[in-house]
Length: 218
Ligand code: C5P
Image (tube, rainbow, N blue to C red; front, side):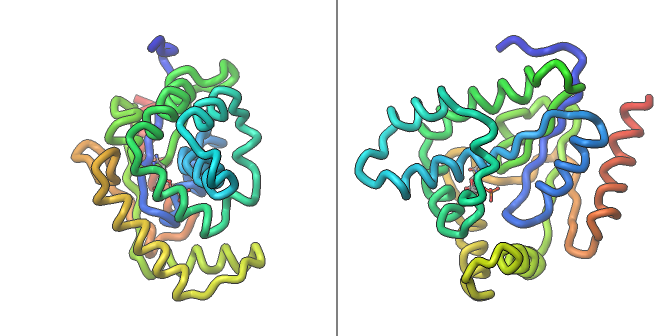
């Protein structure tokens, strides 16, 4: 694939609700990077499955990804727990992963010209998708902290869900995302670990920003 020269590439992987998305958005804004939340693409396909139980097929996914518009990712329905679980199930499928990879790598290596580079977050970004990224971060937090954060987010969205349901859902997804055969979530040796359990959004951002500035200003 043709890659745009001299761009900043940032790759982030994290388990669900560790705060990676929030940080990615802040970094994108600060450094004028194109941001892609790759989990939303799996959620989009997970929802496609829930909505098209009978018609769901590789061809349907291919067509939807071919005609894909980034604005689809803003759809609030992608935020539900049912969609997250469906996403985690379909994400085990190698053929489905292969369909979305090209699109993701195009975003990473050929972001729109107005941006200085790209930032992607997900589960297989530092390991596979953008493994030569200029910056690689593995963002995590304890399960308890992540459950609390996600539960509060659902409350704000007025979703009817109990704390235990959120706990079970995140635990299941962690297990499935870390143990699957294709694109499992794991920390690489060359990535920087950021544990957000006891860090505020601001403190976490400062940590990342300091690391990036040090390299960029050299
Ligand atoms: O990040 P988010 O919680 O939105 O991701 C939903 C699901 O999509 C994850 O649980 C994971 O199974 C899948 N995913 C993936 N690879 C990525 C991003 C997300 O398999 N790069």
